[in-house]
Image 1 (spheres, rainbow, N blue to C red):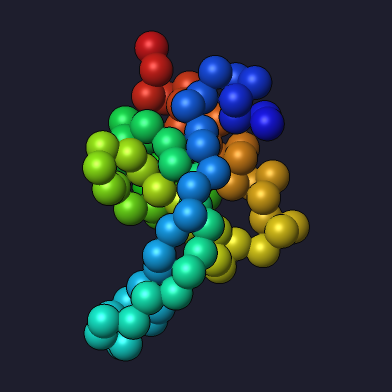
Image 2: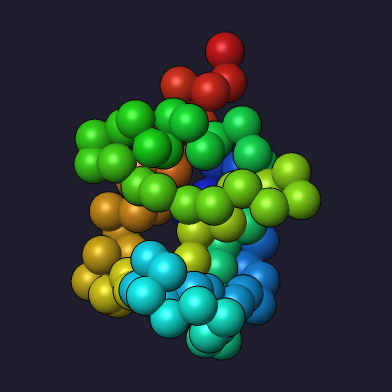
Length: 88
């Protein structure tokens, strides 16, 4: 809600995540992600704290499988900061 209120095109979407950074080839796990404009990928990755998503179909997906609920506000703050950086 905070992201939408700031006019950020943020949409909750089903996702498939890949566990272990390649340790389990071909294995995917059902998950959920926040879909954001692809233009936020670099500012998120280079921000403080860095938030790493994946770019897919011209969107930056932040997979929430490993984000603890108590970290939701920190992720939202990072997206808001990235949006300020990405949008003049």
